[in-house]
Image (cartoon, rainbow, N blue to C red; front, side, top):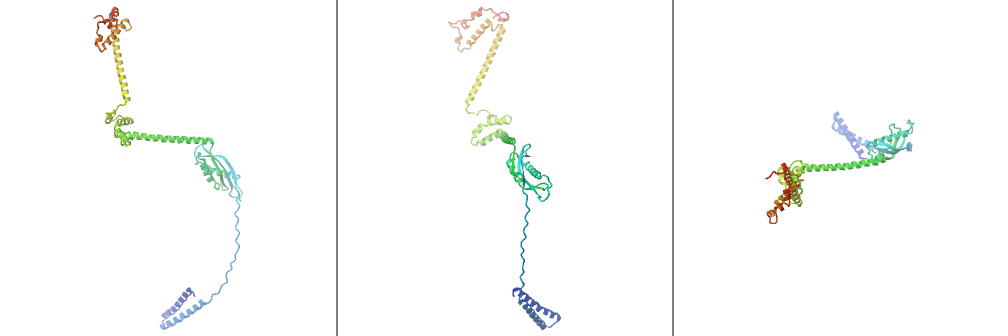
Length: 379
């Protein structure tokens, strides 16, 4: 007897003993009759269940299962082999106008419904049209200068079998090649070189603009900002910074098309105690000599002009004999007057007044005096 049978036996005995007690209470039996009937009921239920549990179970014959052989698996339908059609040097538009990609590939195709009657006269043309349409769509976004990348992309995209729009043929492409013509390749290389050169030149020009904007707009904005900029680069050269105030002020004024501010004008000249440059000294000497020469020429021209005016008033021609004698004597008298020693111009015992005249006194005396307006009228 297992645990389950014991529980069932206990439950049945308890129920068999309680039912008579309940019935006697309802019917008004005496108490001793409750317990007598209850004990008899519990004994009968217990004996009945004990006899049922201990009765041996009738063995059932084992179930016989029939084993049937497995059904054979149906063989998959035989697929038709792919047919091949070759495409060579087909022009496809690229992302640049007038630069076509040259497309070559092997198109593989087969009917997608092998057990149905064909409704297309040329399945190869439908397969080629499907491949070309897909290749054209992909090539439109490719650059002609990167044919290797375009070939890899087309090989990956066109190598997957797909059905055409009508669903009659399954098609794919292998051995895809993408090239450009030699003329287009040379043009693309030249354009790329020019574009790189132009970009480099534009970057350099932008760099120069930035430098000009920085120097003109910030460094040379005012003489003070120029001095501060120079001093920030040469923090230990205070005296040199002071000596450069004048040049920096001039640079700032030139950069801003303005005059040097009044407060910086004392710094424009050479600083006191500064040694003179030999080149500047030589230049100053040459300038002074040129000024003296110009003054001397002006003086000589003025004296000659006055002598000619005097001769015109006297009526003496400079080309005549009298004019030449008069000019000679005037020159001798001028030379004697410009001598430093006055004793040289005094007549000595061995010198006569004629010697001072250069021996031309008799010639002047023998000459006929001018008449009218040709000479002086007398003293």
